Amino acid sequence: MTSFQLLLDGFAAALTPVNLLYALVGVTLGTLVGVLPGIGPAMTVALLLPITFTVPPTSAFIMFAGIYYGGMYGGSTTSILLNTPGESSSMITALEGNKMARRGRAAQALATAAIGSFVAGTIATALLVVAAPAVVSFAISFGPEDYFALAILAFTAVSSVLSRSIVRGLASLGLGLVIGLIGIDQQTGQARLTLGIPQLLDGIDVVIVAVGLFALGESLYVASRLRHAPPEVVPVGRAWMGRSDWRRSWKPWLRGTALGFPFGALPGGGAEIPTFLSYAAEKRLAKGVAKEEYGKGAIEGVAGPEAANNASAAGTLVPLLTLGLPTSATAAIMLAAFQQYGLQPGPQLFDHNPALVWGMIASLFLGNTMLLVLNLPLAPVWARMLRIPRPYLYAGIVLFAALGVYALNGTVVDLFVLYVLGLLGYAMRRFGLPIAPAVIGMILGPMAEIQLRRALAIGAGDVTVLVRSPVAVVLLALSLLALLSPLIRRWYARRNAPARTEPERKAPAGI
Image (cartoon, rainbow, N blue to C red; front, side):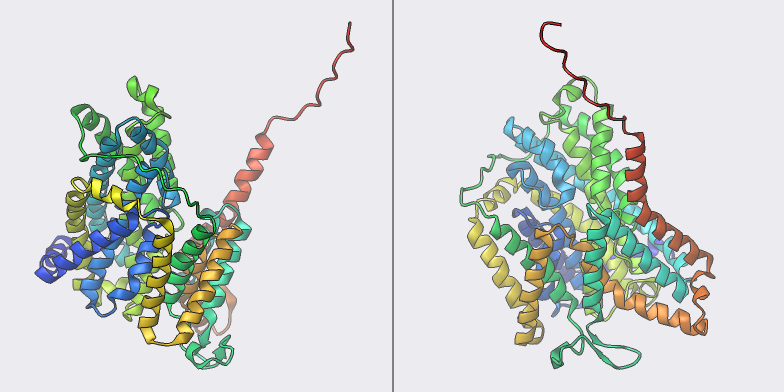
């Protein structure tokens, strides 16, 4: 069957009344939680992960897709009205969007963010339909050494790109790999790092890790810096755009989409780089009134980065669904959700569960439309959500996280592990260690270990088996490049920096 026929089957699954309801619930919950300050899409999905395990897989992932896209939409509202980006990819939106809001153009800023997200999400999802089968056909030929090299590429790219320091990124990755080792070794049957606790023999549930490091850790970190002064929320009416706003926004939407999708599909690409590139490109291309407004609230500075942000969200689904490779923190939590259902994303997922995959992809088109309908008329409602007192908000997050984790297995040990991981997440934020490498290390670590053992078994212990495949050689070379590129850039910048001259002595007075 062609991709178009499979997509039509996916629409048939997604358009059932039950799945439409789950899609609506997902986008509403995603927007609702994503609007709240300091809560980005990754934390949104992690927080709502435990409540969906009584739902059939297809319906659950339609809901997850809605939560994912809804969280991306909701982050722009916080950035524009409160000048508080929920994640790093929303920083540019806050930079220009909040200035627009303070100039009395909050409605236009929210509208261009919502419509741009819809346009970018729709185009990027269409590209996902085209790209996914091509990647699957290529991935079928992968051997154990190729998958191991792919995991190494994910480790190095995420550790070097998503961190201000390679050392801190690798330290975070190491913590995740250690957490992934806990439990029974799948080949030898030996217990590892369980401390004699029977409940840890099956390892730490990925949901507990995601909720602990993201939701609980973020709540503790924000609460430790809580200001009791009420937030200053810019008032907003119904979101709308004039003719001039449309004329100035449609090109940035398309350019942002073109930048966001490929970066989202790259290991470690994420949404931060394309949003900054989109902002820089729009600033360079600005002319006339737009050039004068940059730094004061230019609508192009909201339209382009928001489109890039949402296009990258669809881009992350390409390696996630086709290779089982998460390229962002949110994608890592989505992978955890797949594993919770006993599913492993990759080429076999498209063969064995086509209804799930294509139903999820089709639901992205539907979810984008629902989000546009929700965000444009309900902007004043989302603005009121920002006035929730912070102590109530973060206390509720901690309580909800604990209830969700306890409901998984009904053991106190899970709660204890949750709080330990929450404190670890707080400490990592306190000392500048990124969270994404730890989560990706914990999820991909066991897979990398299994593939390494399989490759060595096939090669009878010969280590050179890891570089016999051309695909593995290319992936390992890219891993080395990802690891060394920050060092090369730093060395190049120091080499080309102007030489410092000694300060000239001041001439004596009177000469």
